[in-house]
Length: 242
Length: 152
Image (cartoon, rainbow over all chains, first blue to last red; front, side, top):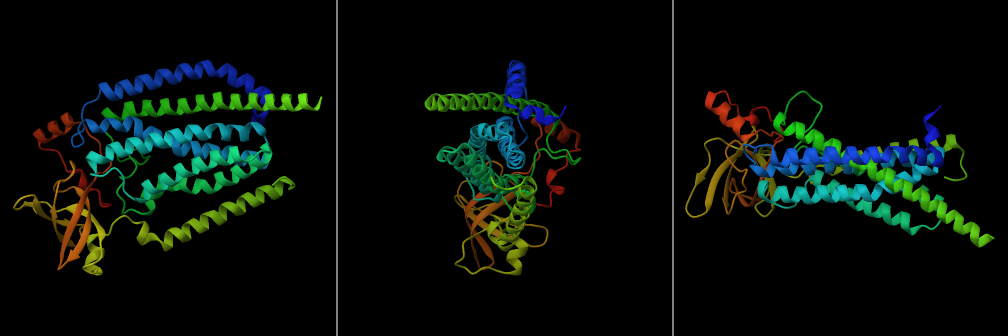
């Protein structure tokens, strides 16, 4: 019994099909609890007022935008090394979800920045690398669409994914490399110093869990669609030959 | 990638990652002044820019230095612990602007005074409910969070 068994499309369809209803339910539950708790049952921040509530969308979305690219990177590497088709398709399926998360993070960040910093956008290192990550998502999706042969498309997009991971890493750690920027440091870090008061922290954790589950659910759903699309294409090709 | 053996594919991937990391580090190192969003008062005191250069300066607004002059013009000092530079500004300030808070201004350095044309507030990563801060202030145990924040 090895983990690579799940790379078999048939096995993947079985397992993901059985898991999906549970994932959907759990996602809805955590997202609703987290967002309602955050939006309606927490007080105002001492300096930001109620603008602080954007944190419940912005932080999880930005986190998942970067993590989605990291997941695509892992899937691409598995494809390059082991040639599992499900892996390549999972990377392809995750891209539009990551793109949406990036868009949510950019939009909520701008809405928060206008009253707090005094500007919608600034060419700060972290903001800039996040914008480049957004453009990489667009390029990645376009490259998949542009190449007809599935295996070549998977190879080339994998290489693009490796290059783009530079900006995924930078948008997370740019604050540490170039400390003279506008964006604040990490709100959630593993060091002991407590930055975010518990009142905001616990609903935020629930929201993050909700976004992670949402991402996993959508990736499963979309990968299943991609696998079915492949099967359809194979059937059509066989029809034409017959 | 197609005609290669698995071992060779892994080797290529590892080499690609090393090359990417080195090139990113070199570009980041070469452009560190351009990538940094602002300069600190110490950097400006060490190398004063010319009067025509427009740049950004960031630091903490010094306690007790904020003066509201005629009209909408205000003046204050910005410090990073090492050097202090006086600033003048005409216009509307963002919500988070205040004494002891971080700020970033765009403008020119003329005769030892930074004439700002735009001011942004820098927010640190502390989030606290209003009620808690009020309670702490009442008990007199509230500490300004910027004391530990030397990054601004």
